[in-house]
Image (cartoon, rainbow, N blue to C red; front, side, top):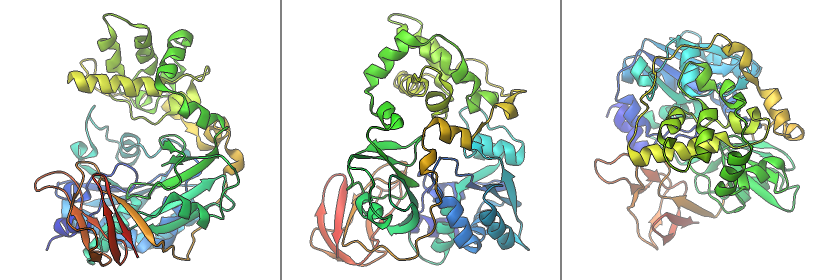
Length: 437
């Protein structure tokens, strides 16, 4: 069995949030493989901790991926300030074709377009993917999972950081389907009576107040903040209200565009022009919407750049949705050329942390060695890009750790779902199944 099939059978997906099925990437051809360890979301530390704790497995996964795609070089992109992680991966790379590339401490250093350019000097074509310039990029945890897949071990657990208003921020490895409540308990519990969870981080994460939300293959961390926190209040504002405020208050200052990392790389992304569409009621919106087409959704324009605290990122999200419905592609200039002031306009993570008003929560989140073994696991049937899994078990059926619980339809993009622990299937719905010990 080749590596591509081993990875498919193990259910490996992008563990950095994207969730693209990894076996598809490994079936391609590329000359460079990059491990994305930039981890630029404020308060999250899981990638750095993973590099410290599992550097040999990371490098082994990169080597296996290089063999699969025919790559000549492997690179681990990690921020220079993560000294312990840098030391661990540097030692693990000794004697291999894998090297370490040190990155600056800015946001969003982990954007694939930015990372590929910094490591290789290549600019991904507009609307393209790293493979279009001969590169395969995966999160560092994904490579650890590739190494495990080569040994016959499926993806049944997830590493993530729990931070914010908790007693002791922590990075831990938990079975898929574990509740956020159990993870927060492992961090010593809450220090607020009205928590809101930001799943995946402050900048690009989704908000919920449901502590029973299960951990999935793509969840990088859970940041908990009080409902009264300004970031939470902004994220919870209804979309119509966001648009109404933008329509009345945007003065076209261009700060959202001038700080945009994709704009600074030379791509045709101009959020300030997208903001104009909020006031359009007849014609013209379709043209200005195109300036959102290449937006990476990092949120820097909304949560850092805009002096009036408007919502250019959300306007871009809406514009991209309109473009998809219209099946309309960008028709303007496409050849990217990096902005001459790009380096000087990068946003240091410390500055972003201050702007977000979360400096008091910016604490280390060390590895928790004690295992977490919840008695009830809620497993969503869709934990990757593509389609949801079809259930392969019945209610009342005993299952063993590593057993396949669900699979995508034949020929469809998706990833297998495995039992994280021994137990019994207690419930099956259209969206999830429940396994209890």
